[in-house]
Length: 91
Image (tube, rainbow, N blue to C red; front, side, top):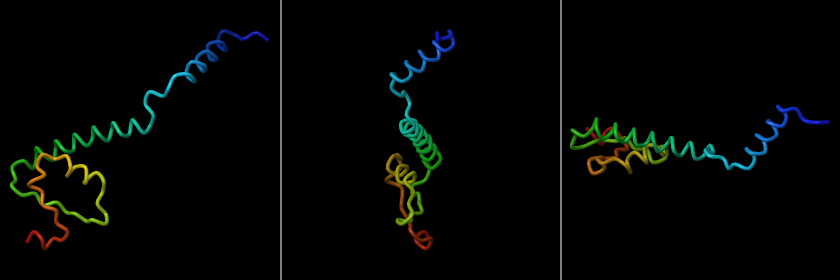
């Protein structure tokens, strides 16, 4: 039974797509997006806190989110950041 033009087109497209590697696998998109957000977050952190000589950052070693870790690693104000684990550390 001969294929219709639409069936030929669909078959050709499916064949082409099966041979093309994924341009943006989900892991890469997540990595690129998180990198973009990290830069935006760090820029915001740096610009808003640049006027302070000391920046107290609450740090709970047991529940410290990776985003905060990256923020503290990437900020240009790292020498001003003091990690505190209890509020009485800043009183």
